Structures are given as C-alpha cells and as structure tokens.
Image 1: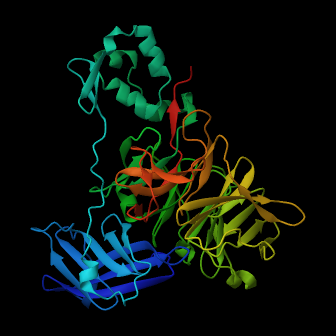
Image 2: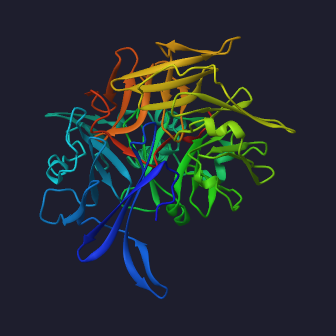
Image 3: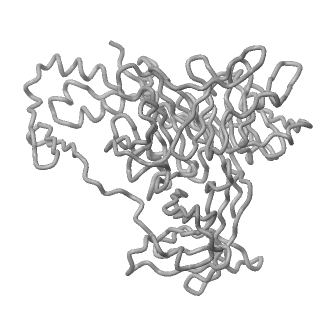
Length: 502
C-alpha cells in the first residue's frame, strides 16, 4: 500500500474481473490537488489469511472513480486508454497512469455547480494525452554515410566524407559522452576519428562538464531504466539503473546525483557515472519528508542532507552517518510543501505552501529554526511555488493560472520580496523535488522558466519576454497547464559527463 509522504489519501474499492481491488491516490501540493502517488492492489489469500498485493500490470483495464462510485471496464476493444484511472475531483477530470504515476488534468470545470458525481461526466472526455504531431526526423544512414534531414516533403543530404579527417578528430574531441558515442555510430570513418574509450576507467583524465539540465522520468515499460529529456536539443535518452533502484522513488537531485529512497533504503546514485553512495538506514520517519535539500555535493564529507516533514525537520551529516530529528515548537506554525529546501548563504531556506519562508541554521553547537513572520508572501492565489538560488540571489517562483511571477529576496534591515521581470542570461529549471538555475548566453534558453511538465511529448516552459507558455519542440503556445502531463517522480538533473580535454 502507499507509503509516500502526502497530505491525505483517497481510497476506492471496486470489482475488477471478479477480484476485489483497491485504488489508492495520495495528494499534495499547494492546494492538495496534485497526485503524489497511486497504487492498485488486489485482495489475495495467503498463509496468514487475506492480504493486499500490488497489481504489477493493469494495461487491459481502465478505472473510473469519484466520491460516489468506482468501477472498472476492459479496454481491449475500446478507444479508452488502458492502465489509467479516470477521476473526477475538485471540479476537474484527472487521468492517472497507474504504472509510471503520471497524471494530467484534461478537463477543468471551475463554474460547474453540480455535485460532480455523474459517471457520464467522468467518461465524457477521455482524450489521448500524447500529442502525435509530426516533427522533423533525423535519420542516420550508415550505408551511404550521410545524414538525411526530412522536414515535410523536402529532403537534403550531406556527405560526411567530404569533411577533412583532422576536422572530424577535432569535432570528436569536443563532444560529451552521449554525443561522442552517437558520433562513433554514424560510420566507419567517424569511428576511426573517435576511438573507443573506457569511460569509467578514464573518467578522471577528462574534464567534467555540465550540459543543459535534463528532465528525468520513469523508464516507461522498463523498471530498470530512467528516461531523460534534453529540452535544448529535444533528444531522449534511456539509461539503465541497477535492479535494486527500481523499487525506489527519485526524491531530489544535485550536481548530477539522484536521491532515491523508499521505506527500506536511501542512497545517492549518479546515473551517468554509475556511482552509488549508500546512506544509513535508521528507524524513523525521515523517509516521509515532503522535500529534501543538500548543502553541497554528496561526495563531500561535510555535506548535510535536510528533509522537512509535517511534524519535524530531519538532517543527516554524511560524515557522521546519524539522522537527527528536530521537532521545533513553532514548526507547527509552518505549512511545509512538496518542494525542496535551498541551502543559501550558510542556512537552509524552506518555502511553505502559503508562501511563508522558514530558515534552518546548523552550527556545531546549536541548531536553530525560525519562521520569517514579518516577511509576507509576495503572491496570492497561486497553485505552484518553488525556491531556488540564481546568480547569488534567493528567488521564489509562483505560478498563477496563466502567469509566472518571480521574486528576489532583498536582505536588508526589513526583508521583502522584489519583483523580477527579467532573468537576463539565466534560465530556471523548477520541479517539486529540485529547482536550480543555469547561465546560458546565446542558446535561446535564457530568460525562461522550464517546468517538469509535458505537453504531448514536449517540455513546457514560460518565456518572461512574452509572458506566455510554450513547448520546447514545436514552440507551440500553451494557454496553461491543462492537458499537460506531470510525473510524480520526475526531477531536473545536471548531466555531468566526462569530456575530452582539448
């Protein structure tokens, strides 16, 4: 059954092909209207009586849920997408993928005055969530050693053998690991220009570089892989992870490391360098934290991991390997949210779901917590909020319907939030589990905010120059987050690959 940290869980009993099944959905976020986790179980007999067993697959069933009813139907000969739960709640129609735990709001009825219990309303608009819009395809032809770029009815061919060999070697020396491997797979000439390298053994001899941040998602049909989407190039990568990681959930990201945990284990994993740092397993409630934050890279001994739950703050010094619980008396006045705290100027900052700010300071002899009560929330009526560091400043991001508002914390005698109308050459990458900024001068990604949401197959971003939402691939204008897909375990990660030194 569900053990993820959440504000509350809604449960539904239903008959699925003669078996008693239960659907559990956990909710969180600013308005407690975001899906945090979903699980489908069935009741089976065992040596100890009856017990709930998780259903590994429900691809041939669709579940229809509301506060007044719950039923399922087979999807073999229908146009309804199997493996999904369709739920009418909060005057919105949710479509939830029970396997990869992604969800989308495909219908919003803000002015709906009814009770919202009609099964006909829940089944009315089961739209297909993935956009099948045609896109330019890049095809590598190994036989002719040429790249053919097809766009509509036009096609152009470029013979790669016309390039001088020393130019090919120069190109290969400037590539990162992923692009280097793709380069070698084009043809024999490219393979000679870029010789085979044992990256794990030789990684210390290469300069570590950071690419554009990638969005990591569950691995689709595979339980032992992770999907990565590059918003800059639009490429997708599938990277295998150890079998033991498939039972965990990605909770945080920093410096190319993923924090993966469940109720039994917790560790950092670097998917690009295949390195793992185990964290101590200790009885307690630190797994049920809503968000996590790190003071520095987990490879450093003095790094501190911090988590916030409903009742206390937990922290772990990686050097000592001991979890500490801090139930501060006034912590109950703080409203923790499903987002990550930020380590800034020697302290951890927490952004509550009401927009209030809390500060945790960890010194050798003292641990202190305070709520900045005189600092008012800079925004009202928001549905998402994030906290991050950008250019030496502490920024907060608030999403209000069709607008994104950004504020900078002014550390003066009287703290206040200042409105930010331009990010300059910075780009923000925000998600509940990890948010950070990068500097990009001429990539076309600057002065934008990238979200952990997909519209069709493309990542959604907000442009501060036009005050509109767009998709990364087709540059299509998106009115708001309706019909976008959000994965419960998605996060932004900085893909740090080794690169050949010039």
